[in-house]
Length: 126
Image (cartoon, rainbow, N blue to C red; front, side, top):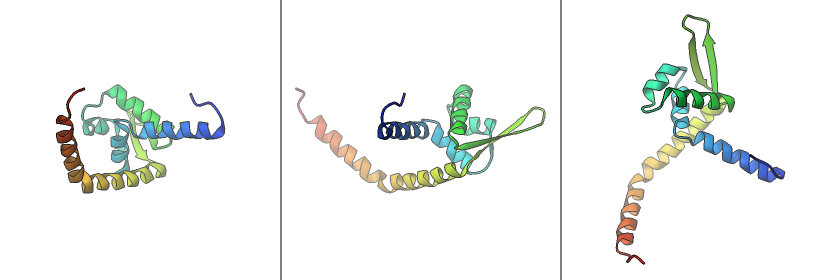
């Protein structure tokens, strides 16, 4: 729960937003919905390992936060599509930038990890 003065409440809100978009499934959903309207079953197929319940909860939370727009078509059975909002499209661009950064630096990170692990394995326990 976020309580306190204005700065503390704002920081808590930022933390909540980062927790939401950084969740295990949120990024994948935003990426898929940013490519165009997507249906529940399409998301379920594309996001390997997600349960129906987790997909439902994550979609609701992203819609609640204004990142997805849900459209229900009056058909039998009902057709439901999810589309990224302009705010989610902006987030998608940021994710592309982050992905590009990770791609550019993955070899350096792998080297740094190997050097760290080699260094730490020679330190006596104590």
